[in-house]
Image (cartoon, rainbow, N blue to C red; front, side, top):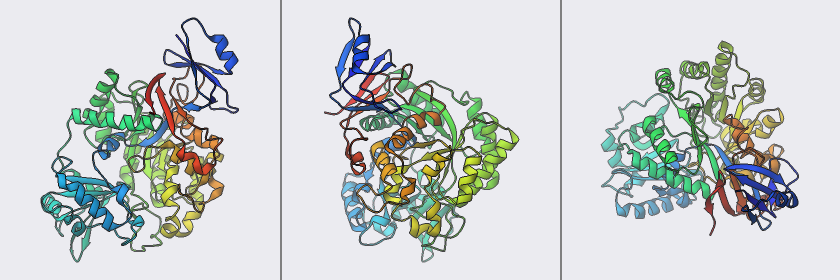
Length: 532
């Protein structure tokens, strides 16, 4: 039995829009006019009136952290109280009155010191001592690359002025003593002290995150979830899939730090593409530097607003060469987190060495974020035919700080439209829980190149058209995972993953795109979310 949808505004992946489409057995079977659709109807088919609403392929968030999003839903929502340091501490103190919320710890995420109206500094242990002196407290920055803890946590961790920072990390000091701030790899010291979660807990977090994603129109994601044991994570996903409870298609960006671990993972049956269209193994993922907001993204020169640092490189060149080379030799893609231009030099060197050793034309190796770039690096990205995993929603905040952080490097950065025009595929995402898993926010920022609340556009020549922005969240995401022949467009034979919006992004002012309500979301033709 077919379901035939009529009287809509349907973006199939091409213009002009059509008005109807049909679905049967989880696949699109037709897209065209109402008259053509009605002529296809057979006895027993269901005809559904879309009421003039807009429909496109389901959104594909091409880089995020699904499991971390599920975890963030349990944590104190510091992102909602980051107007001032005083507000942050007051909210967190009230939240802590109920005691630990995460395996003996009180944990929150989302603060951003650049948004504090009173003191433009990162919280430290003394601030968090006001939250609790009885329990360990951790407050993670919105970017996930900096965390602050209280004195109780420092005591539990055994961190002193003599504690060495791990490679790729830094432990903050003030007056010769730990100030409670941990940067990038040093944060591992915190999480090593928090008890591991069990499989049922992991499954509960996945369910919660999927519900949140479906409400945003997300039907596919490319997710980095191996912060905990990969075996447990894979089992949890596959059990949910087998039970019919996985409502987002997941392409796992497999995070490994060394050749031995990666080879053991592949040898265990996790080679490129292992799995099915609900859960499959994707590229090697490595986080090679930090964040711009935390000044830990690795630059080729000192930060303009803090000449004492260039940021943090999380791996040596030798390690990048070895792990990226190993993945490539096994036919595996790579997707490397890289924000600073100094980091990008090292990543492109490693990819070029891998391609030289084992040439492969359609490798689709990618740079996740690809933010601070020089003109010579843009040329090199094109020459190496790299995939770009952009997060256009970062324009909302970064456009306000980028020139202060990196000076004239800002004039050739966030150049995703330039790379697209030069022939590279640019897929889009939110890096959730760094940002909300709301594709429409990213689509608006891609089109306006300005903060969501309005303001000056940053490098407006890099603005996407509405069609390019939609494609970055649909067909380009499918291409990122070698799935462009099975999803990402509304056409016969494709998976019937689609989202219905109350209004068309083509019809509203660009500054209002993020306010368009998601009416409903369908995965394989099955409704997984409907707005009440």
